[in-house]
Length: 76
Image (tube, rainbow, N blue to C red; front, side, top):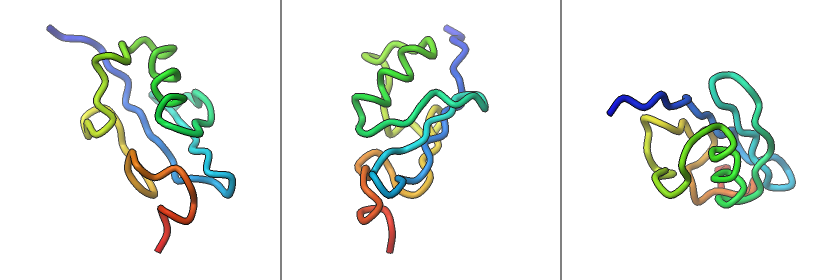
């Protein structure tokens, strides 16, 4: 099974806690939570039921991982 999967980058939270999401260089939107992120991935052609948010082969998390959705939880 060779499914073409986009490389997804989730950027650090902004001051409101939103995270910019890109797939293969294209901006998908600004996710406020994991549900938003899964919706963007669905629109990019992935099945959200088969996506693991902690999959490093699919998602590159910048500024904190899947549990970080506010600027104060991702910064030291």
